[in-house]
Amino acid sequence: MTKEQIREVWLHQLAEDFNCREEDLNSSRIILTEPALNPGRRMYSLEKCPFQMVTTGDGAVISADKALWPFLEEWIHDKRGIWLFEHPNMLPLELELKKRGLSLAQTHHMFLPTGEIMPEECAYPVKWLEQEDLMPFYGNPDFPNALCDEFTPHRPDMLGVAAMDGDQVIGLAGASADSQLFWQIGIDVLPSCRGKGVGTSLVRMLSNEIFRRGAIPFYGTSLSNLHSQRIALSSGFMPAWVETEAADA
Image 1 (cartoon, rainbow, N blue to C red):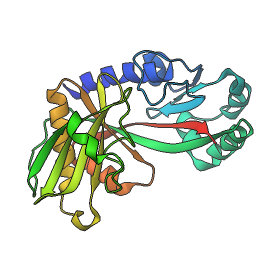
Image 2: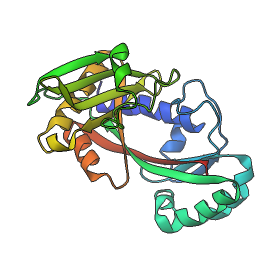
Image 3: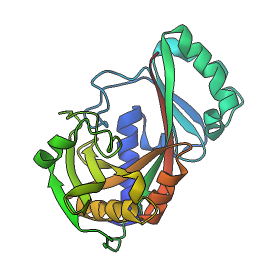
Image 4: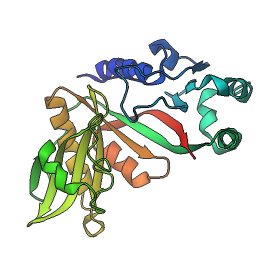
């Protein structure tokens, strides 16, 4: 797929996630919508999210319970969408959410692939892992980012690739089917093996294989995880959107 084709289907995915129109995501305005359990959404929960917010670089879309709208309408007044994610603006939002038993979660920087098939080489032998092969890795503290915390039927881990040093797994990249079309990549490398390009190699290989299987890979990381962001960039991904959400405090 080309970068333009990926962007087209990605906008449709975000519209499902945030219960908005695709054109809303390219708008310079801040748009409020109500949460909805749209069937094509990314399946992080079986419940409606009481607050989530996204920007693609200019405006913002906020999906929130209707009870929050009076506060939000005042909060967004005279603001630009991208600046809502800055700490001085997030603080009053957090205080309001606390009144309702909620709290902001992480702010995620999200990356999409350029559409190019990246070179595949690794300094270590690799082992491909299908869904059933991933089961022994759940609960392993060495690989908290590569897989979900446990097998989750509505958001299953589908595929993994491991870098091997003899019989030891020194790096693991996994892909979860967050929606039918979009599979998220996570990566972990043992501390003693970092700085050798293992993470980048595994992410590249897994991204290419996801494309071959008819899905689109994407990559998410936290605001301050610069190492993870560098892996995304060196693996053929580009910054695409920023999102945050609230959960029970």
